[in-house]
Amino acid sequence: MAGKKAVGKAKKTIKINKSLTGKKNRKARKESYSIYIFKVLKQVHPDVGISAKAMSIMNNFVNDVFDRLIGESLTLAHYNKRHTITSREIQTASRLLLPGELGKHGVSEGTKAVTKYIQTSTV
Image (tube, rainbow, N blue to C red):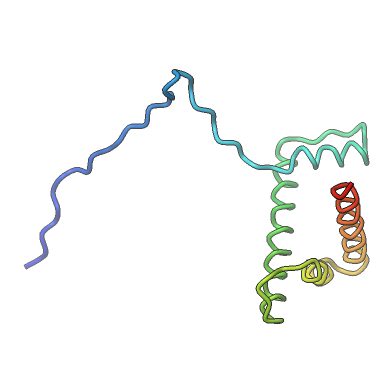
């Protein structure tokens, strides 16, 4: 004989979209790099715009590069039997992932940004 199936419905809870004050809850914010991509675009080409689809592609590109950097940094930390990712792992990962001159520029710009951050945060 086959096993018995449970017959019955699970109770559904309905979320009310209003808080105790009577105001509607805010929609959850979606994190994006679009503000920063737009600022860089205006620095490089002030007279050029960007479509929403192109901005979405650029946002996905930035997320993909960050994911690859994190993955490679984790692998390097694992190879060296470390539990902490340091700037050294990030630099090495960027050299491995970004080809040739692009890797060198990435490392130098990253070093410059970290130095600038340290100088402004200690003052």
